[in-house]
Length: 82
Image (cartoon, rainbow, N blue to C red):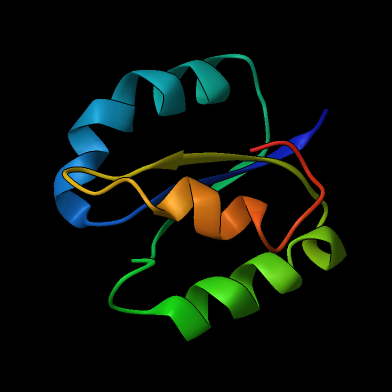
């Protein structure tokens, strides 16, 4: 099974992702959930993405509220699907 990285820009975004997280759990898909802001923590986002493949990540799911730059920041650093 692919390992999925679920990333959100703020804890406030989690509610929007709960349904997807529940489905991943229901189907036994290994995943990790992180709060990382492309605006407030760009270096942490870069480090997390750069090391993702070493952790077995095969796909990213990104969500952010008002300014959704997180997915673009992730895609700019990885060839994995975002």
